Image 1 (tube, helix red, strand yellow):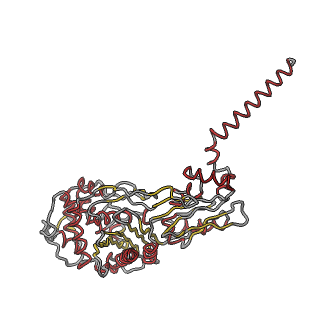
Image 2 (cartoon, one colour; image 1 turned 45 degrees about the vertical axis):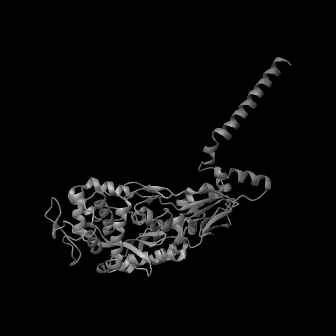
Length: 485
């Protein structure tokens, strides 16, 4: 071979080598970057080229996929009773990505997860159409329906747990929205989503997980737990050192009780039964801010909770003495999500053990083989079994003969606590109605519930936890109990 040909051959060899290096660089080094690039439409086309897996409740899918027209995206997501289930599933949209379970479990639902590599490989050889896997939830369909219908056209939320395992049984938020209306990528879908975003009632806000409210008198069970755990009181029927009136520390203001109720030196049981602000405010002051924070933290306050969907952190604040007293009765800067207050009720019902809340029980491959099963996990021990049982007695008195009688269920032991939380500057807005509760059977407590209602239509004097929230909690508990029979 003469010298010019050798040079040409060497040059061509270098070009081939450069091509191989470039190809391997793109396929292996930058593969993930290119696959996730927002401008790579081929990835998006492939993503919607097959049916998405389903989210399962009570063994049945609450989601599905339908073929689209006029788009290179073949399938889009649909929901059954979308408004009822949106606080659980979130949305999945061709134009606006996804949220909540639809987002967190996207790899399984699309079939692109590494856990499904074998299934994808097998489908290449068998010629079977690729589909996504399924997510089996812990949700109880009857309880979810009871919660959603119970809230009706009011703003509010419900969270229900199985105290023994932490399984989430219901997660409702109203007003809600149907994720199906913007699941596609048309102008109609964009308009529907924009309308939801501009709605002053915030239907896309998950109030059960992402809204914090002053918990009002429902927080008094946490203050009672702190008093028992720290030895401030040991006998729930002994008189407390609680004068009437009681003046807030470092202040000339007197803490008020609602109506003419027997709160002077009331026992813990009677103080919770009548919801005595003076008793629990002084109790929080006697314990001090550090001990109140410590107790609240044990129940899950001051940190985010992952279910796996993230719930905002509830807050028991570092504060001065007067504000700490008010926080001890669920006011001031004390803020809690409905999930958090359901966790409080569940820990008390479960003899002091707080289980990690979760809503994904299993992940399934497209052929329905189980590839993941959740193992229950204890999150903390907020109070001893002995003290938890004392608080149970107090909460059961509230339902038997106190402010929570509307939550009574025939033949079932129910414990609860009402709350009417002040709202707005100088309590200028209509208050929030709260109720937390649990139901007990011979095998323990299968359900604990927290309900908060924002009823802008009700007369101010008619707003109470016992009147608005407790009947909803009763329906949710009864739905769970009926399903166990």
